[in-house]
Image (cartoon, rainbow, N blue to C red; front, side, top):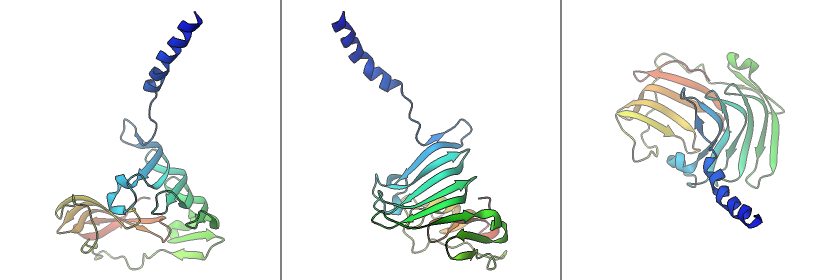
Length: 210
């Protein structure tokens, strides 16, 4: 009897594994990202990260970043920045790390003044002014001339273009290598998304929601 139970246990073990559900990088029935997500180099080939190296990871709640997100150095292993997000905006603590993994700086983000075009960083350099003064209705979208893009890039058509840090830079409809109708993402030096600019017919139209 004991031998029969042992054999039965071996039979059931793989079946348990088969029944498990992968909870990583999930999209719900409404098309919204949920739960823990990891972006690898293979997800953004233009980033130059190793295919299985991590670019960033964290949690989505209804398609918006929530909680701690980690950004990695180009080795795809060493964290370079940890940031606390709330409703898709940095709000709370941040930690910066050097390439050896040692903490080199920490502080607090406070987006309460974001609508005044200021990003306040506690224990940092004070107030950072967003470059909104230069934006006018005649602000042209930049072309990707000279930028490194994947082989699937369409000079006329829908594209996603990433910068050299693996961050989404432009997405939407392109015309003659220029963002025509879509979004342009602006980041600070640490890779924190500061603003989203909406372009229509190749010209700045409005600010997008973070």
